[in-house]
Length: 422
Image (cartoon, rainbow, N blue to C red; front, side):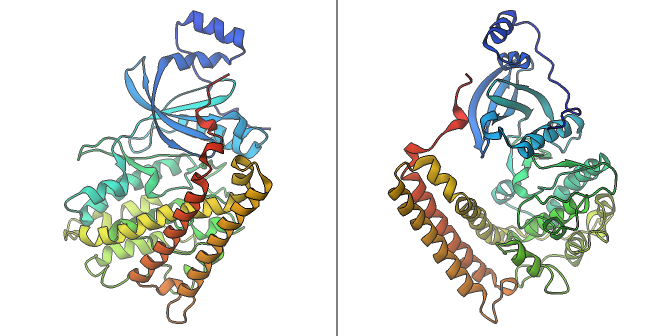
């Protein structure tokens, strides 16, 4: 049974008596009348349980983002339903300039609607690449905003658990735009300052080691993610390339430090920046500094930060990172082969054939990766950027093949995200 006691129920928009009467007659929830306060626009994104759409809130004439979740997709899944109510409860509590603002929520018979501030300035890395210049000063300005937001979140005994560049957005396209942290879908509220969470969640590559073990995790896991973001900001590529939990844990514990600063890509980066990263990436969560402590770190407070333009090197690394980001989808598709078969392949023989094609492609990729990363002198942690790029290119190639196999049968896919309310 879900705990909804902390979720503030939506306030119904005034007026619309006819709509309220029709809703009552059709069996719609009372809050469904709030939908009349929105004009829906383009789809901004899609996920397993629904879509995110842009909308105009008529009462304020403000453009907003609306996450629309399908109840059918959540039905019978108590964990996912509880995550929805947790997200609502958390968003309603948080009020900070660097956290996406909650606006409203309502429901229909078939869907949940969560309305938040609309960020139109783009993702963090996309904006950086479009700049003509990027320095450590710019990186510090970014980290100050993120640290302040995390400090606030943690003061509310809330852990985000999924901090990564894709969840850091600019509010608008202007050069002065502030950043906001978005997507609190797997955030958790702690019962006390030192409370721990024992169910793992997050994005491999940004998630802290303790999240992947059974020892429990808390606020320090967000600090680790900030360390990975900082590393990637200054180099353009991720410090970790492992594709499994076991590989990642081995990768970040095999040496004295969990990350390497590869030459020549890090030659122009200050020692203060590297020290900041290593502090955030302290393996032992109990030894890891808090967001408040990192805000007083010399790299953050120094008035003599390196002003060298590092954008050319960041762009090189970013090309690699983009390929890796695209390739993450292969893992999701590999895990969902069975589900895809049931969704869009009706003939059993065709289904088996298609699954075998996909599985064969995945096996081929894994074989290539093993050949690349298990060479005695080229273990995963010691790959040069060029070897990393080869690895990501292999992954991306396989991803493209799987997508091609799936889209050949796209007519049989259930596009439930755009179903109309009944």
